[in-house]
Image (cartoon, rainbow, N blue to C red):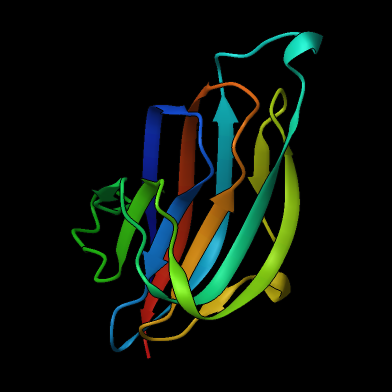
Length: 155
């Protein structure tokens, strides 16, 4: 059971998008350990705004317009590779299927966003399930970083 991290950095965000899209591999289960989202291009009260952040499980069609991310083990010497796949910043969002919003929250653009649940409150994903972490469009573009930490284990 290895912790993996998938990141994006210095991404200009001006549209609603799936910040991360995680698809669990066959024969694996995954839980979300942590999510960090932040921006570093908007400062001051005039730019203050809140963005919706949704954790949604159940879409069957992948998003597009972003890029694949290769998850890396948090412990550098482990040599393990994630089998599950991750995409970042899909501007054409995932869709179809029976979507279940597991968490509906808001991100203060100035303060950033952190999801770090207690173990009993973690989001678990079964083999071949898709989870997207979706955000609404900011009023004006921001430059963002994001980190998704997850644990992958055999079923």
